[in-house]
Image 1: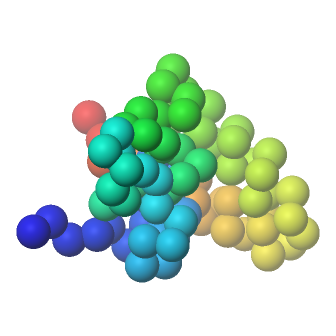
Image 2: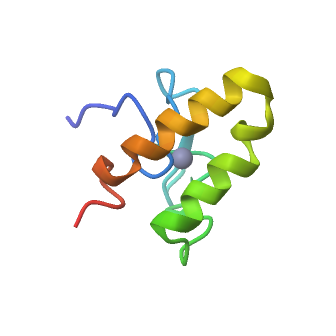
Length: 87
Ligand SMILES: [Zn+2]
């Protein structure tokens, strides 16, 4: 059996033991992506680029005070190592 990833392999947010996992087309939990990025077997924003995802982080978690800014900053640094963006 595949292991769950600890963080979403698209946006880098923690998956917290499946609680925030996206869903596959058969309704099972995604092992790799969160519910914001991935639902029913598809990316919610399939055309999103790496730069686009950085903006998403700035415009979501990055707006939640100083702590959010730090999380967004760290998140942006790790994005290129996530499976969705790795080349
Ligand atoms: Zn995600």
